[in-house]
Length: 499
Ligand SMILES: *[C@@H]1O[C@H](CO)[C@@H](O)[C@H](O)[C@H]1NC(C)=O
Ligand SMILES: *[C@@H]1O[C@H](CO)[C@@H](O)[C@H](O)[C@H]1NC(C)=O
Ligand SMILES: *[C@@H]1O[C@H](CO)[C@@H](O)[C@H](O)[C@H]1NC(C)=O
Image 1: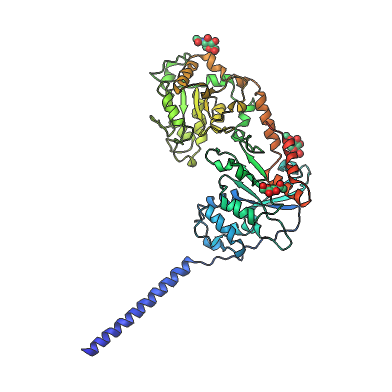
Image 2: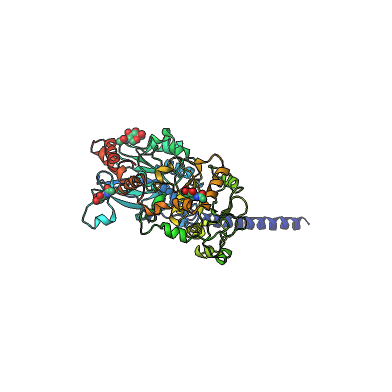
């Protein structure tokens, strides 16, 4: 009995030891596969040249694009990740915190070490000008080279190098205290490292720090859409459509617009605007209302959803967006045009919604164009889409919208002019009923653009000769040469002018 017991205990011991060994092997295997050794030998530190005609810029927007494009880095093969070297740890930890990257001991090597793919060469001419491709063939040589990239090793100084890279920031790289101000300003700023901010295409209401004077004072050059805040205005939304607005051969004519509207097919519609339409074409028309409404951000700060819902009580509106009541599925020819099965505005990234929207807009007398927020100079594609497609915008947005209109006379229904949505609706109804009055809103199509508009176009055409990169690099060079960078910038501002 005793002997048997002893044997049993012995067998148990053996079994537990064997299981322990198996368990250990498993753990080792798991650790081994989880922690694939990243190889850093294919990447090398960029040896920053001492050639002072080359200037470096660290672009936070590009860092951000890289991180987001690859879906928070999860898809990048671990084999091409590198360990963050000690001297870059502080900077890397702060950037990781900013972009919510949790495990930050390793990053894709491109984010750490400069490689060909992480750089873009900017050929610059003195005075902040950029040498554009079409000029280089004419034998013009660039005065200096500027390299814009997103690798952290730009911040590693060589022994005889006293400069940190210049920095470009944007609204997606929020101007938070710890990164920009405490860390970058105190540890990675030298007299010749210039900081530039670019803030375009987003409303200040959504990014109030981008307009905070306390934050802006850390930047040597600011680019942004609002002329009352920023020093330079980069190309606005308008520029995607500018040819179709200024070029009379590409712009829709008054006649074209007036003969190509679909008839309104609605029993509740008492507007007799379309007296010249055939009855059978009316029956086949999907257009039920004089106004098109197509919005997808329903909680916008401007309160546009509520505004349109009030208007709908007094005038018919065709709703093809995702906000409010009575949403209609898109007509099949529009769905086809968008190359998609999408009957509504969801998942806009997956199909050509712009083509569909423009085609739909061209059928309507009026199109709701209310910005998501009401800010100075904040004029988006909503306005330009309506103009380009030949519909009259029902506009609420920039309080200074008159500065941005191509027309000398009225070309928008300006919602600021009405006390209530009801007043606006009744007025639109009266315009829809009166062909002469409606036509007057398209009168500008037969005329040269307004003087103010032309002045603005002139500004943007001179701005095409400048880039933020070249301005920053040139200012940095001026400091190297013991000259005033501030003076250089003032001269550029004088040359480009204002509008
Ligand atoms: C650039 O901006 C910083 C922060 O405002 C300032 O300290 C520095 O003097 C500026 N550099 C030049 C050359 O103007
Ligand atoms: C239509 O509008 C025109 C231009 O504003 C105006 O002169 C005319 O009296 C209007 N017609 C009617 C019937 O209201
Ligand atoms: C832009 O630069 C080119 C070449 O230097 C010059 O010919 C052109 O006049 C400039 N355009 C404007 C609008 O300043």
